[in-house]
Image 1 (cartoon, rainbow, N blue to C red):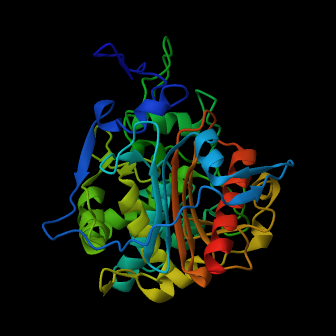
Image 2: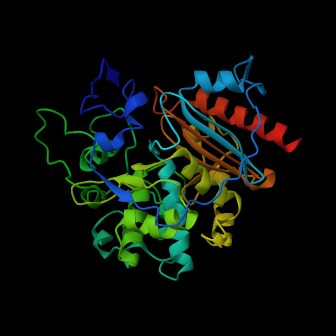
Amino acid sequence: MVDHGNLNYPPRDGWDRAPWNRWSFQHVREMVPTAEVWRGRDAPSLLPRAPRNLDGIVYKKSEGGEKNIAQFLETTFTDGFIVLHRGQVVFERYLNGMTERSLHLSQSVGKSLIGILAGILAGHGLMDPKAPIVTYLPELKNTAYRDARIEHVLNMTSGVTFDETYTDPFSDIAKIDVACGWRPRPENDGRDWPRTVWDVVLTLQKQEAEHGARFAYRSIETDVLAFACERVSGLRLPELVSRELWQPLGAEENASYTVDEAGYGLADGGFNASLRDYARFGEMLTRDGFFNGRQIAPAEWVQGCRFGDHAKFTGDYRIATPHGAYARQFWHEDHRMPVLLCRGVFGQLIYSDPAHDFTAVKLSSWPDFRNNALLKETLAALNAIKLVLHQG
């Protein structure tokens, strides 16, 4: 946020929330410590272009009325938006000061990177999704994860008690915010707050459901999975993602992770990258793990990400996606279709549909953590674009 040449920085407690997020999501490296995810020395992979004007495409809003894509981008707090069809960039637009080189916070879109990373390591023979978590992280034998398997954290069905209430300053997710360095502990609070994300994992002692019984969104599951990935590879997460994803994808820009005081890259939401590089990741998903002339992730793993158990996807999770599901760190728009959604709070989204050879990315700075109306509108807009492109 610039005022007459003087930077007015957001407050230390709340920089990642409205209204500050309109600026801070593109300036995370100025707010908290980060570690680089190196793109490597090779030239960026090609993103062929076949521009089309999509502004006039009209879609119907669920609450009634119509809007076109130009209006959609202007009214839904968009920072960056890109669409690929048949492997070509057909539309790319930047708003709110974002540029092609800007790194934008992924929030929980970054979880899907870890889901793919786990598949890559499984393909290397380093990780077995059926194995108990304590096989790789024996320290967790004294936590509620003692009897859980890797596949449970992959699918967020572990049954471990974890409070994901973003607006409660004393919830479990708030402890992650403090432990990862995103905000200070509450003032005048004398409790012993965890100093690192690993410390948060070790505090989880209660289990609310049988492992594997039902889906419940727990950000910490991604971190448990990432710690296992680090352990089996012998690498810290930024280096591991660089080696297995960012360099093979032919990324255009270095990415970054926010890090806690132990140097752990926040897997559940601290990844930052450019719009085009998110698109490269999305296009790799659309092509079953193949991109930049190589098989980056095992095709059968990516295909296995596409279909989740709708019966375990209950309650409020069905409001925006009534036929949805969740599997391997991916959301599903409709469990009967192969569409993958990488979703993050405040409006981050990667959309991958192999059946229509369609990939889209929307980076946003919504005023709300979650907004089902905006999510449904975004999906309606993307489906309208997809239909027009598919019809030629």
